[in-house]
Picture 1: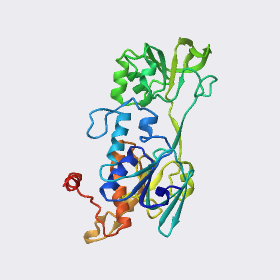
Picture 2: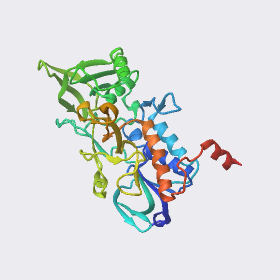
Picture 3: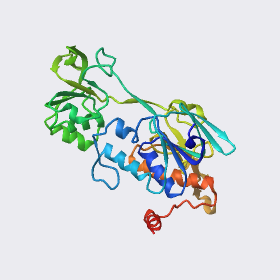
Picture 4: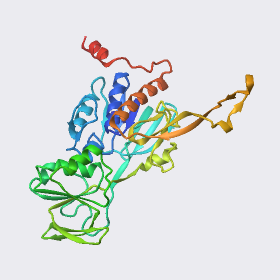
Length: 368
């Protein structure tokens, strides 16, 4: 056990993706001692694991920035006002309430904290597979993650899928790969409309209503792929060096399911109130892992209104109904991180203000 393991922290953040990293920065602004637990070997979460070489366009302050560079910038920013302790390659397993707060048990140790923020993203994620022999992860020329675009320079690449990842990878490989073909089983894409328009106007060969039927390996390398038109049954053989499968991922919250947190019906998201508090006092959540619970004022239909008043005028009776929704945007994760930290600060000290002050003022004070 290290000294950091035995120390009582104000806040433990589970997850070092964009939301968790920004939460660590916000906690530093509030003068809180912070520990971050991350099951991956480096910070960034999906940014660095799924698409490190893709450009991000919706992170405030950056017209465009590579995902890996954004992750690096967020990690550096976390140290602006504090000295957060990061524990990488460590998976959270159990959470227990104690007299001083919480005991977090991981696969490598125990950690003590007065409050907790769950910023675990979509949890542990594994790529969806086709189940076709030769397309298993690790097979020659088969890719479910793209970590280095340069690895495809001068090669013949087939991209399979119709979502943002498939379209973005196909566009990113232009000018690098010798040829790029994208197949999709439908004629409707799930990607951003502007990206789809760019794809259709690009040199990428787009084949719709096509699916992979089989692959051929020889000499320890991928030789070809057979695709089939799912409307006509017509088959076509393509000589390729690499196939990128962008079929989505299966997410699993894992051990977090056993902590007593209120989850959605699918068991994939943690329910929070507008202050990012979960059903467990002292435990907050932010980012992709959350499902926001809020009260929306609904007006009853006329036939259900209560009549009364002068002239028996119908008076609408307000009714409050609970709704649950989630947004999967970076900017929403940042805002939720700031809210979660401020409400955690007030949880630890009821007299504390929610507003942390302006960072520029804090920086000036520190510099002076």
